[in-house]
Length: 347
Image (cartoon, rainbow, N blue to C red; front, side):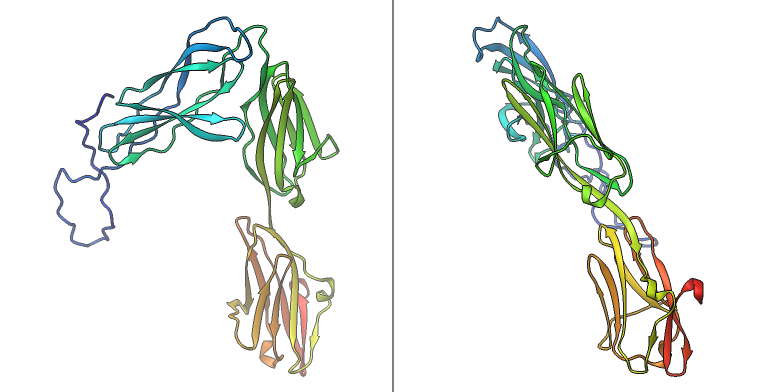
């Protein structure tokens, strides 16, 4: 609290000391100063209110308080920047700067029926902190005054696995009560076998059942009443464990003539894109002038320029991303100058 000038917490030194190295001798007072940690979430209170005269009426003022940073970075706090969320652009804009270390300010000329949200950034001589958590939404509500829609709970970007259930939920207020619409890539969506849309008193939700890769995209919720509209947007990303689809004709074996070009193509499905490794007899295959490996979004392929007898053996392909899975097949069983490619279960 206060200017925190007496605080001298020691920070970790830069660099690394390896075991058995001679430790560097340092002063007991050696520490590194930096920017402060983020301040606390603002709390907004109405200072006074008057009866509205028209739609642009204002209240006298609001008071905002917040917790000081838990760590001032080694320098005294010199001021705070107060930012407000612009609900039209969803950008944060600076509205005032408070000099000194006192964690409070007063704002005047606050409009009735408008949603406000604030956050605070602390400053010291080293620079600004990260922004603190935003305040809860605040609306100066007066009986009989209509209020444009505003979101209390907004959509968040979501990453889910294929076949999982995905839910997006919003809380939105306004007077009169706003209607809620849902969109996927700017196309309005409605309830279906895989999509459940729920309407609630203060908002609603959309549930995607058995998510598919093509469900990835832009999710948007639009709340509307006679005074206007509010929009919340999020990105949905569906990921899939790698799946290698071994062609059916590989089951009975592939025959290559001596010096014939060997081409092995394995269709795949994966998101994010997997890392592909081909093996021969458990040794990774390195591309060369005679061996090429190519991987696209839909398949991986191995090309050997000329089949030789020593190509008999186990060929294996491994696909892995964060959700690892792979399969193998065999190239083996030499018949004179030909080679047979068959699945592991047939080997």
